[in-house]
Structures are given as structure tokens and as C-alpha cells.
Length: 191
Image (tube, rainbow, N blue to C red; front, side, top):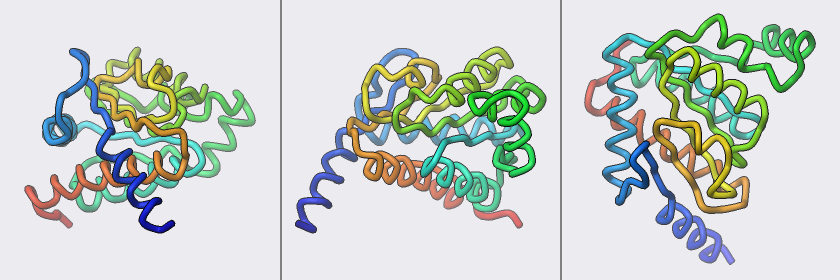
């Protein structure tokens, strides 16, 4: 049973797709390079990176907010302050907990990273609409259905062809960790 679980996980990772505006990037290494290049360009500009997700994906978003700041030397901003989140949810509705703060915070050239297993959460989609209006770059990490809405909205899109939350979230986390580790190994850690 243990080998079956790991083998399934490896199959889903091997079949993970990375897309840009021209279509699917043919191989994993080229896709990772495109992702690293996008984060690197943001770092060089001194732009901010915003990570967001719900449930387990929110834990990944918070973790990556810290790692890309500390290990990647990037300007990151957490959208998970309890007071702000509950204020936005109370005053505007849960579907606006990310988009309302982003209306104030996101600037042209910033990078918005949406992590959503289904790719169809309204609060993520509304935030991506704001990011596009604010001329931010967008990277999505999704799974489940290939035609999910978030995947259609990104400049770069990582898609895991699986409908199991645990596997999708684990692969999203692994790829984000690979990106920040690559940047850290290349640039070193600035404290």
C-alpha cells in the first residue's frame, strides 16, 4: 500500500503541466525555468509577491510568503492578517477577503501567486481579476479539472492532473519549494 501511494504521487508529479500564454511548456525543466525566471524578474524589479489560497493552500501560501522573503530575498506580503481577513469577510463577504486588500496593495509589476486545488474558488477568482486590472503578473497553481477558471487567468499556470487535495497540495508545495530553493542556491541568503 505504501509503494502504491508513492507511485501514484510520482505519476501525478510527472504528469504535472506548466502552461504559458503560448500553450503547454513541453518539459518540466523548461517549465521550472520559466517560473524561476518570472520570480527572478520580480525580485530584480523590487516588486512585491502576494501568495494566496484557501484551507491547505493557505498554509502553503503563508509558508511561501516566509520562504520567498527569508530564503529568496524577495519582497513578500501576507494576505493572512487575522484582523484584515475577518474585517474584509465581515464587511464585504468571504469572496472578497483577498481582492479588497489587493485593491489597495497591488501595483503594476507585482506578482500574484494563486494556489487553488479546484481553481474555482470565488475569492481567488475575484482577486485575480483585481491583479489583472492592476497590471500585476499572475501565476496559478491548480489541479482537479483542466478547464478550471484560475488556470485560464494566469501568465504562467501549474496544473496537477489529479482530483485529490492532498496530492495536488503536496505537488504545489514541492514545486514552490523547488523555485525558492533554486533562487536561494543561485543568490544566497541575504539576512
